[in-house]
Length: 117
Image (tube, rainbow, N blue to C red; front, side):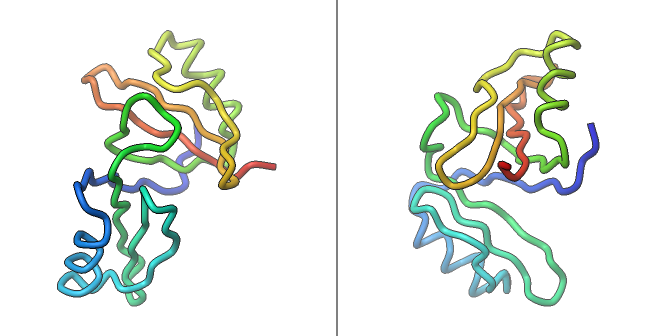
């Protein structure tokens, strides 16, 4: 699998309150997207970013991190071949992302995603 980007998925109880801290105090002032349950805030100067997540909208379990790849289908096949637990099946989500969740051997749930189409 070729990893393009890794993002921390930070669980927060209140998305708007959390955005105030991360955009105001930490300077991650560019809001790349906000789906109401997940938002990505990024520094316009450095590109540093964090995803704030209240509860995943379609998966039964939340992920600790998101890994962007250029071939999510191949990554899914590789994860299955290696015998890793698939926590959320390969799915094309309504917001234009194709993704699956896999459990790392240490128990961490990882969202592996790519752009659909």
